[in-house]
Image (tube, rainbow, N blue to C red; front, side, top):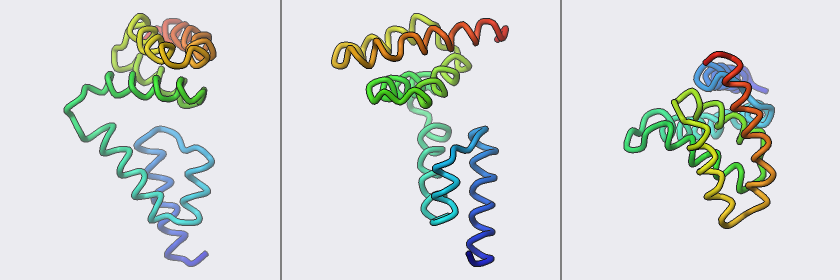
Length: 128
């Protein structure tokens, strides 16, 4: 890897860590191979989630948990349930978003309901 590519890789990984609070393995791998693309992808994500303001952040998080539940993506579901709770979502709002998924994908609802209950309990027990 060239020095310039290594510098770009390090910079985008550090930026993701700072702005999202964590970096999964796949963004690290992508940044090592194509840091410019990873930067573009991160910019799109942060633009939609943090810079656009037509939808409240809580609403965006409810949409994301619904998409993750529909796709059986438990890791993303957990991340966005936590974020929605931090944004003031209630357990009932989270449940209703999950029930909307269940209208078209009852298995998505049934698979993620125990995860939802677990994350809400963790949030409550943390005193947030």
